[in-house]
Length: 206
Ligand SMILES: [Zn+2]
Image (cartoon, rainbow, N blue to C red; front, side, top):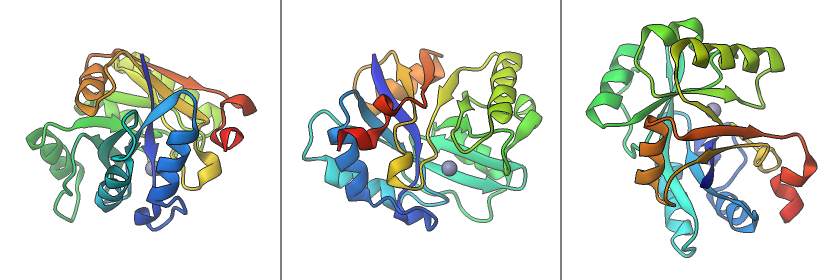
């Protein structure tokens, strides 16, 4: 079992204060969450920086990803280190994901700008059922969406500042490498975990 935060933004997102160096330091300091997917807004530049910095640590897993803003709402594609061509429509983004064999994750479906019920009309691999930036009600609705679509459920922090990291993560039945983790998400071998308990927050370990 491997623990990974599937939704983190670096300074390359423009609206996050988490430097690539901080991502690696936080992961290194955390006792159990040793993986992260870098899901910056419309860029994979931050992923490359984090990946390079993490090279010095053998136990950390950095998964490439991107959060794309479409006319229907946000979509995360995991497992890709390239960027789709602008402008991004839902259709072009899903085509890009299919061409690059990316894992399609629906983040915060009911927190704006989320895809909402429309997720049931499109191909996706997993639903983010816990996102600390969404309200409990919005997360509950995401839970129901995953049930209705019989889709795997994952959790991510959507962290934009260092102290937001660690509230949520996903337990994956996988080997500690990006390929194995992505395959496990596709196969539903995932469990969302979240806690408001201080003991699970990253800054307690720094
Ligand atoms: Zn996000």
